[in-house]
Image 1 (cartoon, rainbow, N blue to C red):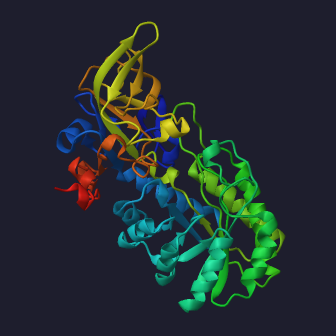
Image 2: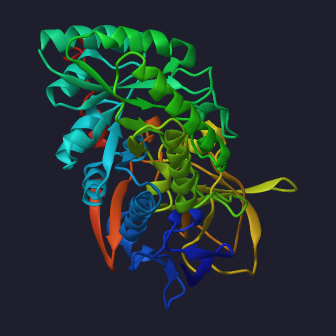
Length: 455
């Protein structure tokens, strides 16, 4: 379903938000200024300050519903979408995804505690990680959280803790399927050369070693092939490999009831991006698993997937205030904003690209000029846009960057001792705080001056 409003020449898709650049509620008010969730962005900046993270609740819920409905439509067995909380971990996000019937995957004690306090059902939490600490493993065990065994280090310690704590553990085995995808080198996780999971050639050994361990029950297998993926064929291939792993597990007495295919579906950051819809992705995965299970007369496992970016990224925007201008004749014009790599490290880390527009008169096609949008940090590489085309602007104008719901807040830092922005959720004309703005004084809370320096 599409609605009439469009930005960047792309109609807004209400059903599959990952195909949009902007949140589904994005509009322009009668003053010619940008709104989201029925809220004036100008007003939000006046009330909450700049820079500012904003999440649109309707976009979040539409994304969740798209996964749930598609799984119900295409997969005849039991299924559970699991939110990859690394994309954006907070009490609010935990509460929202559990309200939509999602589980959650976590990779640290902090993410686990956030999920539990946010109301996620512990039976629907999956604990990942390639270097889990003893403290984290014991916490997960004591809270009856399913643990993904990533490596031999996990295996040795879980065997010991299961006996010492006398706990019956449900675990999954993660392996690298050896599938290459056309994505950024740093976010490929399914290839043979990956820090995650056992290699395929180790599965026989792992299934054999876990077969006789008291209190450890291998209930599932897990694999993940990467992130920001636009191709469907690799997900089809993954199903074949994973069903083969179920057959291999049966040879060692394991009854695999759960199959977790990870996530990785991409979103549209710019006009050039054209990701599959959530429906297309789920259809490909579901049909492939069903086809392979029928081929070997296997009961359908519980199908689990782990979307993160495609749930939260398009729902998020970041609003900055433009400050200084610097014109380098014949080269470029810099405009600087009051944030940058501390609230969005992805451009400097992954060379990631985004779309943006001015908050006031966003559709202005006159006086268009290319600007290099620089952050305020003391790094030459702190550049959010190398060439952004926008209309005439001046100091004090607001710039809205789209697609920042994932891996912006969660990867933020205090570089140069710059406080993190506040975060809001907007819906039906109201805004609520979900993340307090840090102050400069907050950054000193954990600093300690040794006694010998205190007079």
